[in-house]
Picture (spheres, rainbow, N blue to C red):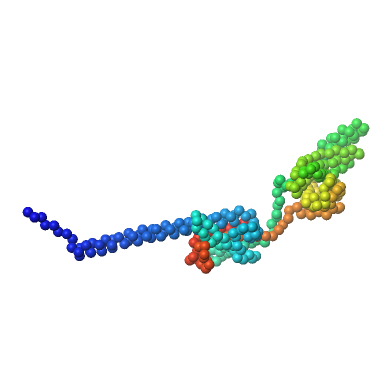
Amino acid sequence: MRRSKEGFSLVEVIVAIAILAILTMPILAYFTNAAVSTSRGKSAQKATMAAQSVLEELNSCTSFEQIEEQLKAATGSAWTVDSVGADKSELTKLVTVDGSEYQAKVTVDFDYRTTDAGGTKLTESQYNNYAKPELTEVYSPDSVVAAESDETDTALSNFYYEAYKNNPFITKEQIRAAMSRTLCLDVAKDGDLYLVKGYYRYGYDGKTYEAVMENTKIERDKLKNIYLFYDLMRADIVNEAVEINLNGLSMDEAKNLSVFFVCQNGAISRPTGYSMNMTGSGNFAQIKYYTNGIPSTTTAVETEIVKHATGKRIAAVTVDVYDKDETAYTEESRLARLETSKGE
């Protein structure tokens, strides 16, 4: 018996192909869209990474002056400044991430305002140009600090022992009332070093006694500041004796030094009209002297140890990332945005 062999007709093949095409198109569209979304996601991720790298560089700056001046002034700097004003700064930079180049625009706004949904102002950049204290680091590599409590009792015992041998009826109270004290600072050169000595020199009945506060060496090219923290000896001393001896320091070397006298608030209150009587040797008058509100009767001093200065303290920072060749800088062309704030 002969078996009948039947195939598909042309119409059936065409219909099958059409059905297959209809069913395949959504699948192809899905994969195409997925590939596009993946590509866009990678691009957005790179753009965000570019924005983050810019923020990290800005955060490495300790002040806004560095952002505006140091970044643009540095040799070979990639930063450019579109505008720098009192209230806003705009900077641009090319950033490369995984071989892709982007253009980052940074807006540093010093006059920003934050409001709620109803338009009520929540915060204000009121601390820009606000006078704040500028503190210097006391214990630093370029400073010498002499800080010891008053050594009157130690000096008193020394004088009493000597005086008692000649006058058994002498009392410590009598000696204390007649003692003198000079706050001393000696600075001498020793090759590439400075020898710095801060000490109390007590006097009684023609005799002296020294109590060293600090005796140290420091490299000459490092020393900038000398701090002397001291206590009052008696409440009746209204003119503190101070002696500064410079051995071999030139005028320019003396001018590079700043000496801070800090009268501490101890058991004895500072008397009315308390002042300093500065004397010395060498170019001691060329030193810059600072006191905490104490005038000098002999040498010019700055009575304010802590300075107050105005400046830019806080800002809203926005980083926008665009394609390398973007010129319109529209919201539609923006690839990534990071917003934060920076203060100092």
